[in-house]
Image (tube, rainbow, N blue to C red; front, top):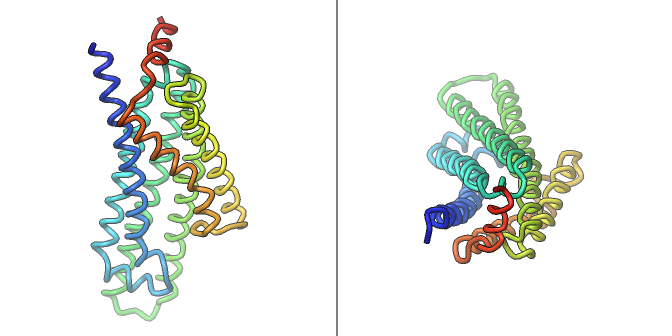
Length: 238
């Protein structure tokens, strides 16, 4: 096995692991945020579950690293088919990571507000609640724009290249393009208030893109990219 083949095998493994890691940490992180993002007593519950909230932020930071890692590792492979789309993919994936990071900062700021509320005796509860409402709104919008809106764009780009190049079986990118369309529709419906962010319809519309990432991840870890398609792409760039 040559150096290029070894490098490709390593990339396939890294991409697969990072997709799984991103999905797992995203789910865990969102659930760990429950004490500070759900319920009317979030200003009290947040400080009482501070370590849990911080752990949730750490999970989302791992999600950010995983998102950046998948895009940078996929870039040398995607550019063999279309360098422009490969560049778009890496730029929009970075933008997705930035938006998620802003959401993490809003949750940690809300935690600080909750801790201040718990330690300072004040009658001005309204000001704390107003600040909390703003910080929760920032998180809600970043959750919509990052893991939904931008994710749909990113998935569509790499799925299109995978479909055209046949690097993986076509049922995988078809699932990816279907999922990206549905998650994009979900984001638009949520933006205009037709459905809520955490809802049955939101879960249904996001299921195909989750399935695509998991199927793609397992395929890359077990089978890898189609060797003949990779060889053809490499020859076409020479």
